[in-house]
Length: 98
Image 1: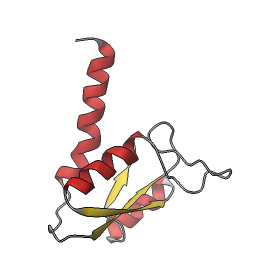
Image 2: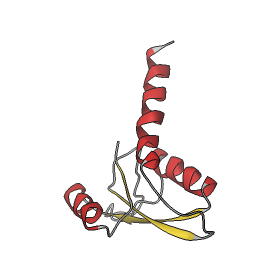
Image 3: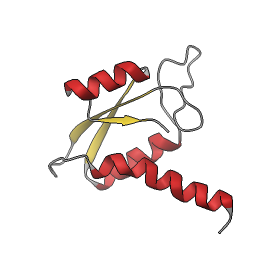
Image 4: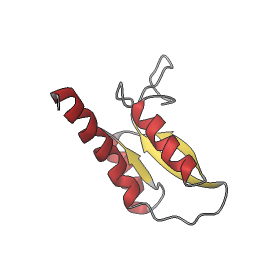
């Protein structure tokens, strides 16, 4: 197995681990609050001020997993310290960071 393949496998497992801790009901259209910060190529904000993350590898993976769980994702761009505070306070459900 090449080093790049090992890295991809490690990355996939690392990005999926938070979802194993996400406990949600299977109701259709339930919204999961997700936070993260501009961190290309994982989280990408295309606007000029880098204020609104709309794309990236982590966003695509999270969207696919939540879709398979019949959940909707509401993404909010937050700096790391604020994202941790929101998770601790229960205002957000999931943090996406590499």
